[in-house]
Length: 188
Image (cartoon, rainbow, N blue to C red):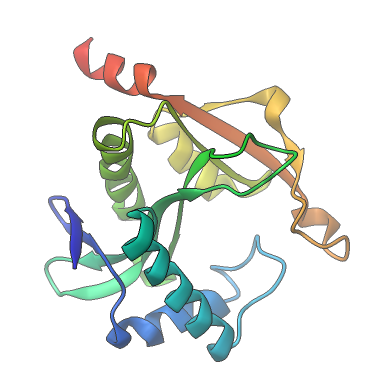
């Protein structure tokens, strides 16, 4: 099922034929550099199935990102519940992404995320969308800045799901964007 379309991309539900790509991005050391572990095939398959279920149940999660020109899956981008009790209020929606390295540097994530912000604010009526990443993950924070998100300096946090065995991955920076900011910049 297609969800959103941009000039170059389709955001859609996952298909069984996407499993190899999903496994690839979850085991690639460069893609997973800022995550505490890489996933096995079985773990990646289970995660893909869970994500697809959330897409169908809620309309929010990490959608497969497909290059229109070749119909090739590239990774994912989506809106989902941040689920960080004690760090962010219940119901906080985050935007996130992961892309196979061969597609890096082409602006695909920024293009997909821009469409999702528009969807989140205009269609879903969200008041705010956040994003967060390991402090040293400059590739992701650069995308957040291109999207017009602003760093919440006081919002930096130690990620509760990152084990203490990976202290260099625990500290996260938080970026925010409100509907008012997003819609307001289009009218100026």
